[in-house]
Length: 117
Image (tube, rainbow, N blue to C red):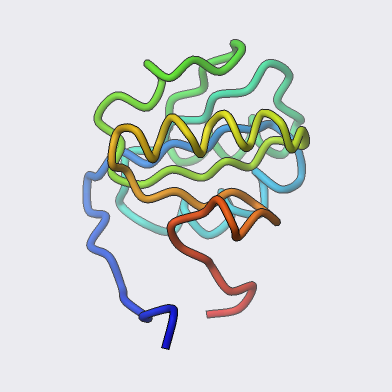
């Protein structure tokens, strides 16, 4: 068995989502149901991402991704619409030892997330 199913305690854990499009919104729709501290990094977040971050009391950083945005992250989602940016985010997360899911790039992800749990 290559993948081991687990549930992670994310109570008050810093979870970083990089991306501001539909892929990021899909991840956020699940994450906002947790008690995690959510940080979203996106240069141009769409209306759905803005609303989800606002409604959960998360942090929205409207900027180009920098590895320092991952400081303290227990979990990272590379959910940008740009595959190159997802790869950069994943590499930064691997360097920090933070588990990372790069949307649609399982080869560079340390975990996968099924569409339905």
